[in-house]
Amino acid sequence: MPADPPTHVVIEPLAAQRMLAGTMRSGRVEVVDGGDLARVTADPGDDVQVVHANRFEDVVPGDGLVCVVVDGEIRCYAPDPVDLTVLPERADIFDRVRGVFETDVLRDRSVAVLGLGSGGSVILRELARCGVGRFLLVDHDRLEIGNVSRHECGLSDVGRLKTNAARDLVLDRNPAAEIAAMTLKIDGDTIDELAAAIETFDVDLVVCATDNRASRLLVNRLCVLAGLPALYAGVFRRAYGGQVLRYVPGLSPCYQCFVSALPMMATDQEISSETVASAIAYSDRIVAVEPGLAADIAPVALLVAKLALQEVLGDTASTLASLNEDLVAPLYLWLNRREANTEYATLAPLATGVDQMSVLRWYGIGLARAVDCPACGDFAADLDTSAFALRK
Ligand SMILES: [Zn+2]
Image 1 (cartoon, rainbow, N blue to C red):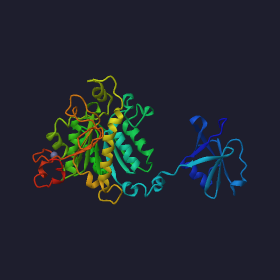
Image 2: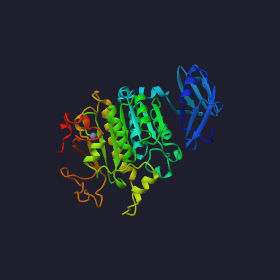
Image 3: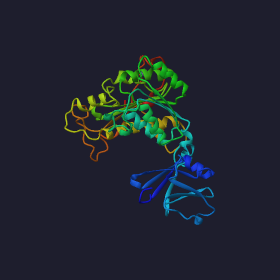
Image 4: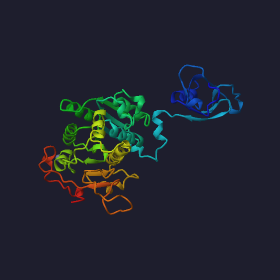
Protein backbone atom coordinates (compact mmCIF):
# COMPACT_ATOMS: atom_id res chain seq x y z
CA MET A 1 0.00 0.00 0.00
CA PRO A 2 1.29 3.50 -0.77
CA ALA A 3 1.72 6.11 1.92
CA ASP A 4 -1.57 7.80 1.04
CA PRO A 5 -4.56 5.45 1.09
CA PRO A 6 -6.55 5.12 -2.15
CA THR A 7 -9.70 7.18 -2.51
CA HIS A 8 -11.41 4.62 -4.72
CA VAL A 9 -11.30 0.83 -4.91
CA VAL A 10 -12.38 -1.36 -7.83
CA ILE A 11 -13.04 -5.03 -7.14
CA GLU A 12 -12.62 -7.36 -10.09
CA PRO A 13 -15.51 -9.75 -10.84
CA LEU A 14 -13.79 -12.96 -9.70
CA ALA A 15 -12.63 -11.38 -6.45
CA ALA A 16 -16.14 -10.11 -5.74
CA GLN A 17 -17.59 -13.50 -6.48
CA ARG A 18 -15.18 -15.23 -4.08
CA MET A 19 -15.60 -12.62 -1.37
CA LEU A 20 -19.36 -13.01 -1.45
CA ALA A 21 -19.04 -16.80 -1.48
CA GLY A 22 -16.85 -16.60 1.63
CA THR A 23 -13.92 -18.36 -0.05
CA MET A 24 -11.49 -15.42 -0.26
CA ARG A 25 -9.57 -14.24 2.80
CA SER A 26 -6.88 -12.21 1.05
CA GLY A 27 -6.09 -10.97 -2.41
CA ARG A 28 -3.80 -8.90 -4.57
CA VAL A 29 -4.04 -5.13 -4.95
CA GLU A 30 -2.83 -3.23 -7.99
CA VAL A 31 -2.38 0.45 -7.27
CA VAL A 32 -2.78 2.84 -10.21
CA ASP A 33 -3.08 6.57 -10.80
CA GLY A 34 -0.35 7.35 -8.31
CA GLY A 35 -2.10 5.52 -5.50
CA ASP A 36 -5.50 7.14 -6.04
CA LEU A 37 -7.13 3.93 -7.26
CA ALA A 38 -6.69 0.36 -6.02
CA ARG A 39 -7.83 -2.65 -8.04
CA VAL A 40 -8.48 -5.79 -6.02
CA THR A 41 -8.05 -9.12 -7.76
CA ALA A 42 -8.46 -12.69 -6.57
CA ASP A 43 -4.82 -13.43 -7.38
CA PRO A 44 -2.77 -14.94 -4.55
CA GLY A 45 -1.38 -12.30 -2.25
CA ASP A 46 -2.06 -10.64 1.04
CA ASP A 47 -2.22 -6.98 0.01
CA VAL A 48 -5.85 -6.91 0.98
CA GLN A 49 -7.54 -8.70 3.87
CA VAL A 50 -11.12 -9.84 3.45
CA VAL A 51 -13.09 -9.87 6.68
CA HIS A 52 -16.51 -11.40 7.16
CA ALA A 53 -18.37 -9.64 9.96
CA ASN A 54 -21.83 -9.56 11.46
CA ARG A 55 -21.99 -5.79 11.35
CA PHE A 56 -19.88 -3.17 9.57
CA GLU A 57 -19.66 -1.36 12.88
CA ASP A 58 -17.81 -4.36 14.35
CA VAL A 59 -14.82 -3.93 12.04
CA VAL A 60 -11.68 -2.26 13.37
CA PRO A 61 -9.67 -1.45 10.23
CA GLY A 62 -5.89 -1.72 10.37
CA ASP A 63 -3.36 0.31 8.37
CA GLY A 64 -3.86 -1.44 5.04
CA LEU A 65 -6.80 -2.00 2.77
CA VAL A 66 -9.54 -4.16 4.25
CA CYS A 67 -12.60 -5.46 2.45
CA VAL A 68 -15.52 -6.31 4.68
CA VAL A 69 -18.42 -8.54 3.68
CA VAL A 70 -21.70 -8.34 5.57
CA ASP A 71 -24.96 -9.82 4.29
CA GLY A 72 -23.87 -9.96 0.66
CA GLU A 73 -22.51 -6.41 0.70
CA ILE A 74 -18.85 -5.45 0.26
CA ARG A 75 -17.28 -2.34 1.74
CA CYS A 76 -13.67 -1.22 1.81
CA TYR A 77 -11.69 0.59 4.52
CA ALA A 78 -8.21 2.06 4.22
CA PRO A 79 -8.60 2.68 7.18
CA ASP A 80 -11.54 5.06 6.66
CA PRO A 81 -14.39 3.99 4.36
CA VAL A 82 -13.36 4.20 0.71
CA ASP A 83 -15.55 4.65 -2.40
CA LEU A 84 -16.07 1.32 -4.07
CA THR A 85 -16.97 -0.08 -7.49
CA VAL A 86 -17.67 -3.79 -7.73
CA LEU A 87 -17.30 -4.86 -11.37
CA PRO A 88 -20.13 -7.17 -12.42
CA GLU A 89 -19.56 -10.45 -14.11
CA ARG A 90 -19.60 -10.23 -17.87
CA ALA A 91 -23.12 -11.45 -18.36
CA ASP A 92 -24.48 -8.94 -15.86
CA ILE A 93 -23.24 -5.74 -17.45
CA PHE A 94 -26.04 -5.23 -19.89
CA ASP A 95 -28.64 -6.42 -17.43
CA ARG A 96 -27.91 -3.21 -15.57
CA VAL A 97 -28.70 -0.99 -18.53
CA ARG A 98 -31.66 -2.92 -19.84
CA GLY A 99 -34.37 -0.45 -20.75
CA VAL A 100 -31.79 2.21 -21.50
CA PHE A 101 -30.29 0.48 -24.51
CA GLU A 102 -32.00 -2.00 -26.81
CA THR A 103 -29.72 -4.67 -25.51
CA ASP A 104 -32.17 -7.54 -25.29
CA VAL A 105 -32.64 -7.32 -29.00
CA LEU A 106 -29.06 -6.56 -29.91
CA ARG A 107 -27.27 -9.17 -27.86
CA ASP A 108 -28.17 -11.92 -30.33
CA ARG A 109 -27.50 -9.87 -33.46
CA SER A 110 -24.30 -10.50 -35.38
CA VAL A 111 -22.25 -8.10 -37.47
CA ALA A 112 -19.21 -8.94 -39.56
CA VAL A 113 -16.76 -6.03 -39.58
CA LEU A 114 -14.38 -6.43 -42.50
CA GLY A 115 -11.38 -4.12 -42.19
CA LEU A 116 -10.44 -2.92 -38.72
CA GLY A 117 -8.70 0.34 -39.59
CA SER A 118 -9.59 3.82 -38.47
CA GLY A 119 -13.13 3.54 -39.82
CA GLY A 120 -13.82 -0.09 -38.94
CA SER A 121 -12.54 0.29 -35.39
CA VAL A 122 -14.81 3.27 -34.67
CA ILE A 123 -17.82 1.47 -36.13
CA LEU A 124 -16.98 -1.57 -34.02
CA ARG A 125 -16.63 0.47 -30.85
CA GLU A 126 -20.04 2.06 -31.36
CA LEU A 127 -21.79 -1.22 -32.05
CA ALA A 128 -20.17 -2.80 -29.00
CA ARG A 129 -21.28 0.09 -26.82
CA CYS A 130 -24.82 -0.27 -28.11
CA GLY A 131 -24.88 -3.88 -27.02
CA VAL A 132 -24.56 -5.75 -30.32
CA GLY A 133 -23.59 -9.15 -28.99
CA ARG A 134 -21.87 -11.05 -31.78
CA PHE A 135 -19.01 -9.96 -34.03
CA LEU A 136 -17.02 -11.59 -36.80
CA LEU A 137 -13.82 -9.54 -37.11
CA VAL A 138 -11.66 -9.76 -40.23
CA ASP A 139 -8.36 -8.04 -40.98
CA HIS A 140 -4.84 -9.14 -41.90
CA ASP A 141 -2.78 -6.20 -40.64
CA ARG A 142 -1.00 -5.34 -37.45
CA LEU A 143 -1.52 -2.00 -35.73
CA GLU A 144 1.29 0.38 -36.71
CA ILE A 145 2.50 3.51 -34.97
CA GLY A 146 1.17 5.61 -37.82
CA ASN A 147 -2.35 4.25 -37.25
CA VAL A 148 -2.62 5.29 -33.64
CA SER A 149 -3.72 8.88 -34.14
CA ARG A 150 -6.75 7.66 -36.09
CA HIS A 151 -7.46 4.26 -34.60
CA GLU A 152 -9.55 3.30 -31.61
CA CYS A 153 -6.66 1.21 -30.33
CA GLY A 154 -3.65 2.99 -28.91
CA LEU A 155 0.11 2.73 -28.47
CA SER A 156 -0.24 -0.17 -26.08
CA ASP A 157 -1.67 -2.18 -29.00
CA VAL A 158 1.04 -1.34 -31.58
CA GLY A 159 2.38 -4.53 -33.13
CA ARG A 160 -0.71 -6.56 -32.32
CA LEU A 161 -2.92 -8.06 -34.97
CA LYS A 162 -5.81 -5.66 -35.43
CA THR A 163 -8.22 -8.56 -34.99
CA ASN A 164 -6.88 -9.24 -31.50
CA ALA A 165 -6.70 -5.58 -30.50
CA ALA A 166 -10.24 -5.03 -31.82
CA ARG A 167 -11.51 -8.08 -29.95
CA ASP A 168 -10.23 -6.61 -26.69
CA LEU A 169 -11.75 -3.26 -27.64
CA VAL A 170 -15.15 -4.94 -27.79
CA LEU A 171 -14.71 -7.04 -24.65
CA ASP A 172 -13.68 -3.98 -22.66
CA ARG A 173 -17.11 -2.51 -23.39
CA ASN A 174 -19.28 -5.56 -23.74
CA PRO A 175 -17.60 -8.48 -21.98
CA ALA A 176 -20.52 -10.74 -22.84
CA ALA A 177 -19.92 -10.36 -26.58
CA GLU A 178 -19.23 -13.42 -28.67
CA ILE A 179 -16.36 -12.77 -31.05
CA ALA A 180 -14.86 -14.75 -33.91
CA ALA A 181 -11.68 -13.29 -35.40
CA MET A 182 -10.11 -14.12 -38.74
CA THR A 183 -6.65 -12.92 -39.71
CA LEU A 184 -7.29 -12.89 -43.41
CA LYS A 185 -6.60 -10.63 -46.38
CA ILE A 186 -9.73 -10.47 -48.48
CA ASP A 187 -8.92 -11.38 -52.06
CA GLY A 188 -9.92 -13.89 -54.71
CA ASP A 189 -8.06 -16.67 -52.93
CA THR A 190 -9.74 -16.16 -49.57
CA ILE A 191 -13.25 -15.02 -50.43
CA ASP A 192 -14.68 -18.55 -50.23
CA GLU A 193 -13.18 -19.00 -46.78
CA LEU A 194 -14.74 -15.70 -45.73
CA ALA A 195 -18.10 -16.72 -47.17
CA ALA A 196 -18.01 -19.96 -45.20
CA ALA A 197 -17.16 -18.12 -41.99
CA ILE A 198 -19.97 -15.63 -42.53
CA GLU A 199 -22.43 -18.47 -43.04
CA THR A 200 -21.15 -20.45 -40.05
CA PHE A 201 -21.32 -17.42 -37.76
CA ASP A 202 -24.86 -16.70 -38.99
CA VAL A 203 -24.03 -13.07 -39.75
CA ASP A 204 -26.98 -10.64 -39.92
CA LEU A 205 -25.10 -7.71 -41.45
CA VAL A 206 -21.78 -7.12 -43.19
CA VAL A 207 -19.90 -3.87 -42.60
CA CYS A 208 -17.21 -3.50 -45.24
CA ALA A 209 -14.53 -0.97 -44.26
CA THR A 210 -11.63 -2.42 -46.23
CA ASP A 211 -9.08 -0.19 -47.90
CA ASN A 212 -9.40 -1.21 -51.53
CA ARG A 213 -12.07 -1.48 -54.16
CA ALA A 214 -11.16 -5.01 -55.26
CA SER A 215 -11.98 -6.43 -51.84
CA ARG A 216 -15.23 -4.48 -51.69
CA LEU A 217 -16.35 -5.84 -55.03
CA LEU A 218 -15.60 -9.38 -53.83
CA VAL A 219 -17.49 -8.77 -50.60
CA ASN A 220 -20.33 -7.25 -52.62
CA ARG A 221 -20.65 -10.35 -54.75
CA LEU A 222 -20.59 -12.51 -51.64
CA CYS A 223 -23.39 -10.47 -50.02
CA VAL A 224 -25.52 -10.41 -53.17
CA LEU A 225 -25.24 -14.18 -53.54
CA ALA A 226 -25.92 -14.78 -49.84
CA GLY A 227 -28.76 -12.25 -49.67
CA LEU A 228 -26.99 -10.39 -46.85
CA PRO A 229 -27.43 -6.68 -46.15
CA ALA A 230 -24.18 -4.74 -46.23
CA LEU A 231 -22.77 -1.30 -45.53
CA TYR A 232 -19.76 0.09 -47.40
CA ALA A 233 -17.91 2.99 -45.82
CA GLY A 234 -15.19 5.07 -47.36
CA VAL A 235 -13.53 8.45 -47.10
CA PHE A 236 -12.18 10.60 -49.91
CA ARG A 237 -8.55 11.60 -50.17
CA ARG A 238 -7.28 13.37 -47.08
CA ALA A 239 -10.74 12.66 -45.66
CA TYR A 240 -12.28 15.83 -47.09
CA GLY A 241 -15.48 13.82 -47.11
CA GLY A 242 -16.85 10.35 -47.34
CA GLN A 243 -19.78 8.21 -48.27
CA VAL A 244 -21.75 5.24 -47.08
CA LEU A 245 -23.52 2.79 -49.34
CA ARG A 246 -26.29 0.68 -47.90
CA TYR A 247 -27.06 -2.54 -49.69
CA VAL A 248 -30.45 -4.13 -48.99
CA PRO A 249 -30.83 -7.45 -50.82
CA GLY A 250 -33.40 -7.37 -53.56
CA LEU A 251 -34.18 -3.70 -53.01
CA SER A 252 -31.22 -1.36 -53.33
CA PRO A 253 -28.36 -1.00 -55.78
CA CYS A 254 -25.29 -3.02 -54.84
CA TYR A 255 -21.71 -1.79 -54.53
CA GLN A 256 -21.04 -2.83 -58.14
CA CYS A 257 -24.02 -0.72 -59.28
CA PHE A 258 -22.54 2.20 -57.30
CA VAL A 259 -19.12 1.85 -58.88
CA SER A 260 -20.68 1.67 -62.34
CA ALA A 261 -22.95 4.67 -61.80
CA LEU A 262 -20.55 6.97 -59.91
CA PRO A 263 -17.01 5.82 -60.70
CA MET A 264 -15.40 9.04 -59.49
CA MET A 265 -17.25 9.04 -56.19
CA ALA A 266 -16.34 5.41 -55.70
CA THR A 267 -12.64 6.22 -55.70
CA ASP A 268 -12.65 6.58 -51.95
CA GLN A 269 -10.04 5.07 -49.76
CA GLU A 270 -10.34 3.80 -46.25
CA ILE A 271 -7.27 4.68 -44.23
CA SER A 272 -6.47 1.42 -42.54
CA SER A 273 -2.77 0.94 -43.22
CA GLU A 274 0.09 3.32 -42.68
CA THR A 275 1.05 3.13 -46.34
CA VAL A 276 -2.39 4.08 -47.55
CA ALA A 277 -2.73 6.74 -44.91
CA SER A 278 0.55 8.36 -45.89
CA ALA A 279 -0.41 8.33 -49.55
CA ILE A 280 -3.80 9.86 -48.86
CA ALA A 281 -2.75 12.28 -46.22
CA TYR A 282 0.52 13.63 -47.43
CA SER A 283 1.34 12.77 -51.04
CA ASP A 284 -0.57 15.67 -52.52
CA ARG A 285 -0.15 17.94 -49.59
CA ILE A 286 -1.38 21.45 -50.26
CA VAL A 287 -1.67 22.82 -46.77
CA ALA A 288 1.06 22.85 -44.19
CA VAL A 289 -0.72 20.89 -41.52
CA GLU A 290 -3.60 18.48 -41.55
CA PRO A 291 -5.29 18.46 -38.17
CA GLY A 292 -8.31 16.44 -37.23
CA LEU A 293 -8.04 13.50 -39.59
CA ALA A 294 -9.70 11.22 -37.04
CA ALA A 295 -12.45 13.79 -36.52
CA ASP A 296 -13.03 13.79 -40.27
CA ILE A 297 -13.32 10.01 -40.42
CA ALA A 298 -15.59 9.75 -37.39
CA PRO A 299 -18.81 11.16 -38.95
CA VAL A 300 -18.69 8.54 -41.67
CA ALA A 301 -18.06 5.74 -39.19
CA LEU A 302 -20.85 6.95 -36.92
CA LEU A 303 -23.41 6.98 -39.72
CA VAL A 304 -22.41 3.42 -40.55
CA ALA A 305 -23.02 2.50 -36.92
CA LYS A 306 -26.47 4.13 -37.03
CA LEU A 307 -27.37 2.37 -40.26
CA ALA A 308 -26.09 -0.89 -38.81
CA LEU A 309 -28.34 -0.51 -35.78
CA GLN A 310 -31.26 0.32 -38.00
CA GLU A 311 -30.58 -2.78 -40.06
CA VAL A 312 -30.22 -5.25 -37.21
CA LEU A 313 -33.15 -3.76 -35.26
CA GLY A 314 -35.46 -4.05 -38.26
CA ASP A 315 -39.04 -3.30 -37.22
CA THR A 316 -38.30 -3.61 -33.50
CA ALA A 317 -40.07 -0.91 -31.52
CA SER A 318 -37.32 1.33 -30.15
CA THR A 319 -36.34 4.95 -29.80
CA LEU A 320 -34.67 4.63 -33.19
CA ALA A 321 -37.78 3.43 -35.03
CA SER A 322 -38.58 6.81 -36.61
CA LEU A 323 -35.22 6.70 -38.38
CA ASN A 324 -36.70 4.04 -40.63
CA GLU A 325 -38.50 6.89 -42.37
CA ASP A 326 -35.40 9.08 -42.54
CA LEU A 327 -32.66 6.69 -43.54
CA VAL A 328 -34.10 5.26 -46.72
CA ALA A 329 -31.47 6.32 -49.24
CA PRO A 330 -29.02 3.76 -50.60
CA LEU A 331 -26.18 6.27 -50.59
CA TYR A 332 -25.06 8.99 -48.19
CA LEU A 333 -22.58 11.78 -48.74
CA TRP A 334 -20.72 13.82 -46.12
CA LEU A 335 -18.29 16.67 -46.70
CA ASN A 336 -15.88 17.82 -44.01
CA ARG A 337 -14.71 20.89 -45.89
CA ARG A 338 -14.86 22.74 -49.20
CA GLU A 339 -11.86 20.93 -50.63
CA ALA A 340 -9.92 22.77 -53.33
CA ASN A 341 -10.02 21.29 -56.82
CA THR A 342 -13.23 19.37 -56.22
CA GLU A 343 -16.80 20.05 -57.28
CA TYR A 344 -17.49 21.05 -53.67
CA ALA A 345 -14.90 23.85 -53.54
CA THR A 346 -17.45 26.48 -54.53
CA LEU A 347 -20.21 25.54 -52.09
CA ALA A 348 -21.56 28.38 -50.02
CA PRO A 349 -20.18 28.36 -46.46
CA LEU A 350 -22.34 26.57 -43.90
CA ALA A 351 -22.89 29.81 -41.94
CA THR A 352 -26.55 29.95 -40.89
CA GLY A 353 -28.15 28.87 -44.16
CA VAL A 354 -30.41 25.85 -44.31
CA ASP A 355 -31.39 25.60 -47.97
CA GLN A 356 -28.09 25.33 -49.80
CA MET A 357 -25.90 22.28 -49.95
CA SER A 358 -23.01 22.73 -47.56
CA VAL A 359 -20.30 20.95 -45.66
CA LEU A 360 -20.91 19.13 -42.37
CA ARG A 361 -24.32 17.72 -43.25
CA TRP A 362 -25.50 14.33 -44.41
CA TYR A 363 -27.10 14.01 -47.83
CA GLY A 364 -29.18 11.02 -48.86
CA ILE A 365 -28.74 10.30 -52.54
CA GLY A 366 -31.07 8.33 -54.77
CA LEU A 367 -29.27 5.77 -56.88
CA ALA A 368 -30.93 3.41 -59.32
CA ARG A 369 -29.98 -0.20 -59.71
CA ALA A 370 -28.14 -1.10 -62.87
CA VAL A 371 -30.31 -3.62 -64.66
CA ASP A 372 -27.25 -5.05 -66.34
CA CYS A 373 -25.13 -5.08 -63.17
CA PRO A 374 -22.80 -8.08 -63.27
CA ALA A 375 -23.29 -8.64 -59.55
CA CYS A 376 -27.00 -8.11 -58.89
CA GLY A 377 -28.43 -7.53 -62.35
CA ASP A 378 -30.05 -10.94 -62.67
CA PHE A 379 -32.63 -9.90 -60.13
CA ALA A 380 -33.00 -6.24 -60.99
CA ALA A 381 -35.55 -6.06 -63.76
CA ASP A 382 -38.78 -6.58 -61.84
CA LEU A 383 -38.00 -4.86 -58.55
CA ASP A 384 -39.46 -1.61 -57.32
CA THR A 385 -36.65 0.81 -56.50
CA SER A 386 -38.85 3.88 -56.14
CA ALA A 387 -38.16 4.07 -52.42
CA PHE A 388 -34.58 4.93 -53.22
CA ALA A 389 -35.24 7.49 -55.92
CA LEU A 390 -35.21 10.46 -53.55
CA ARG A 391 -33.29 12.92 -55.65
CA LYS A 392 -34.02 12.06 -59.23
ZN1 LIG B 1 -25.57 -4.28 -58.64
